[in-house]
Amino acid sequence: MQPREELSREQIALSDPELWRAPEEVIEGAFVTLRREAPVSFHSEVALPPLVEAGPGYWALTKYADITHVSHDTDTFISGKGIAIWDFPPAMQELFHHLGFEDEPRHGRLRRIVSRAFTAGQINHLESVIAEEARRTVDAIIETGEVEFVSEVGGRLPVRIICELLGIPDEYHEPIYKQSGIAMQVADPSLLVGVGAEELQCKFMEILQAGNFLNELLHELVTERQRHPRDDIITTLMTAREDGESLTELEFRQFFMLLAIAGNETVRNALAHGMEALTRYPDQRQLWAGDVERYADSAANEIIRWATPVMHFRRTATRDAVIGGQEIKAGEKVVMFYRSGNRDEQVFDQPYRFDIARPIRPAHVAFGGPGRHYCMGAHLARKEIALMFSELLSRIPDIEMVGTPVRSPGNISHKVDELRCVFTPTVERVA
Ligand code: HEM
Image (cartoon, rainbow, N blue to C red; front, side, top):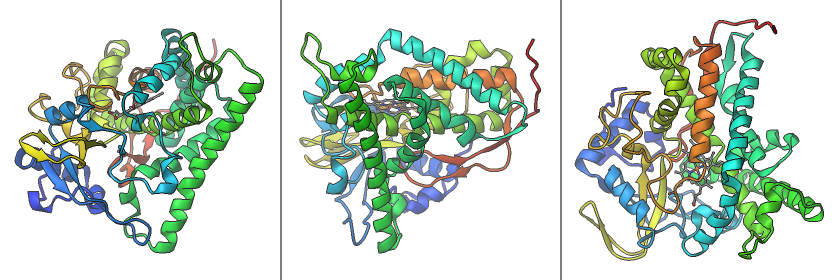
C-alpha cells in the first residue's frame, strides 16, 4: 500500500462523505498529510436537514501519542457526552446508550459486573466454540471453489460467539446478524448526508426499529430467565452476589446492544480486510500457510491493526487542555482517529507494510487506547481471527480474493460489504 497525498491540508474535510468514498490510498494519504502538517485539526460536523442541525465541530487527533494520551486521561476527556462524532437525536439516546458512554464511577461498577461474562473458564469454552465454528464454516464451502467471504465466512462467527457468550439460542442468530448491522448505522450520520427528507425519516425509523427489535428480543430472554433461572451468563449478570452488584434489566439490554454492535461488525470487517491483505501480499500468505500455528497470534494482531475496524471514537473535554500543542476548550469534542494512529510512522516501523510477524509492541490502538474503556473483547476478537484463518489456510491455502471488494463509505466503521474469493475445491473423505 502506497498512500497518495492527493489532497492538500486545506482540502481535507474529515466529515465529508466524499473523502470516505475515495480509494483507500487517498484516505491514507490524507492522514499522512494531517499527521505531518496538522496533527490536531478542527473539522465541521454534518447536518441532516430537516431532522438534525450540524453540531459545533470537533478536533481530530491523528498522532498515536495524542490518541493514547486522551484515551488514558478519562478525567479530562469523558465519554458521557457521546463517543460518536454527532450527539444522537433524543429518540435514539436511551435506546443506543451503553457502557461505552459511561464515566466513573458508574462505568467502573458496570464493567466489574459484566467482566463476569469474560472469566477464564468462559473464554476457554468460547475458544473451543470458535474452533468448531471455523471448522463448520470451512466444511460448508470447501467443495464449492468460490465464496462471498463477508456473508459466508466473516459474518457468522462473531454473531455465534456473542450469542454463545450470553447464552442466546441458535434461532436468534440470523435476526441479530441482520438487525445489528442496521442498528450500527446510528454511529455514522455521514452515511445519510444528501438523502432527501422523506428517505432520511425512513432511515431513522429503520435504525430505531432495529434497536427496538434487539431490545424486545432481550426483554423476552430476560423475562424467561427471571421465571426460570439457569446456570448461564444472563442469570449470572442479573443476580446479585455477596457484593450486592448486578445489572438491572435495562443495563443488561444495553450491554447486549453494545456487544451486538461492537463485537459483531468489527470482527466481520477485520476478517474481510485480512482476506484482502493476504491476497494482496501473497508472500505473507505463504509465510503464514507455511507455519499456521507459529504466526497465528502475531498475524491476527497485524490484521486488526491493518483493518482498524473502528476508525474513530470521540471524547469531550471537561476542562481547558492542551493536546499536541493545540489548546482545547472545556466542552469541545475531541475525536481519536485510531486508523491514523495505527499508521503513525513515528511509532510503527514501515506502517504501510502488512507484516504478519510484526512485534505486538508497541500496541496498536484498534481496540482503543490504553485506559478504562479498552475493548473487553480484544482477546476474543484476536482468537476469532487467528482460528478462522488457521482453519482456512490449513485446509484451503490457495483461497484468494477476486475482483475488487465492495466497500461501504462512512467514517466510523471500516466496512467491507462484499468480497468474492476463489480456491481449489476439495472433496474431503471421512476416513
Ligand atoms: C476486531 C474487533 C474489535 C474491535 C476493533 C473493537 C474495538 C473497540 C473499541 C475501539 C472500543 C472502545 C474503546 C474506547 O472507547 O476507548 C471497544 C470497546 C468495547 N468492546 Fe470491542 N472491539 C472488537 C471486538 C469486540 C468483541 C468481540 C467484543 C465482545 C465480545 C467487544 C466488546 C467490547 C466492550 C464490552 C467494550 C466497551 C468497553 C468499555 O467502554 O469499558 N469488542 N472495542
